[in-house]
Length: 91
Image (cartoon, rainbow, N blue to C red; front, top):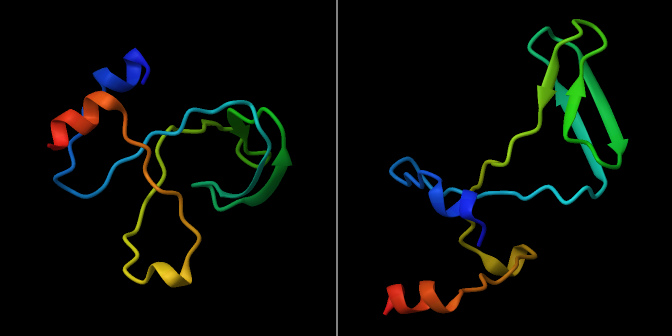
């Protein structure tokens, strides 16, 4: 786990939190700007996007929304991988 990740404030009082490490891989994204413009991106190494209507530049964050799913049979999901230190804390 990176030093930056360890230093983050993991306040979970409002729900689950996550952190994405952008690795320069490709993205397929619909983007809705606050000016009302909507556009689509299919590209590699997308760390920020620029709206061609208002010219604002938006950095892509490291957190996405998450929603709890209760019926696992209906979804593909990844099992959590717990590190040794985290496993000790859970005991």
